[in-house]
Image (cartoon, rainbow, N blue to C red; front, side, top):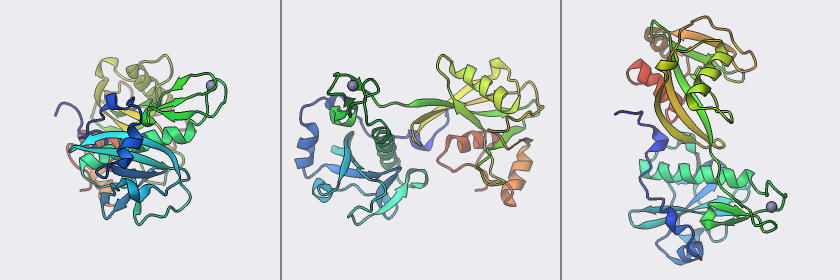
Length: 297
Ligand SMILES: [Zn+2]
């Protein structure tokens, strides 16, 4: 595979974006018994066993709703997302609630859930017009918020963030710990792309800021991307080679940073001294690409 095969980037459904503007689309789909509705509660979704609960419209008609979303078509069936109005309240539904990060379901289901959670997060935060402060209305089957006062339209946002596996001349990997993380937990560096900046520039800048390491610009290589809707990131993965090894931490961002050989990672994971990011994360995929296979499997 040319790029990383990432868990949140394997969507198998058709978003059918052209249907979103169809007048009355959501009302019509709610009348069809074949329509399947996925219920979103914060960053969790309704599940039964280890599978996503795709419910018929009649089963969700009683729920207080923040937004209804047209997600697309799969296997000839229309799929909607229902964002609960209050993620704290316990809804009257006979299901379990599973966080997206720990959802272990088929790719088709995960793809629909990633889309639904990302849109849900946007609707939860972007409730008012940024121009005049009026409460906006959900239109275009959940894909636009419209301001009735000044007629402006507002679209779902995705914030680009770079994440990078940095190696030194001896092919050791840089792993760091954020100040709020448990002792032993480590990951690769990451940071938001700033306005006016290119991706490779962000990779070099974040690395220099966080640990004082300089990169060979010609070595910065794109490896793949996936949505990370906590709350609105698009993670863009890179690998790059450092030209310096001395580590100077930015103390409010980085509590610990060290270079690791593969043997050191394998040993530290095996004896429990090193905790790596979860398997759904792009960080884990970048680390395992460097490692040469699954770590701690
Ligand atoms: Zn407005």
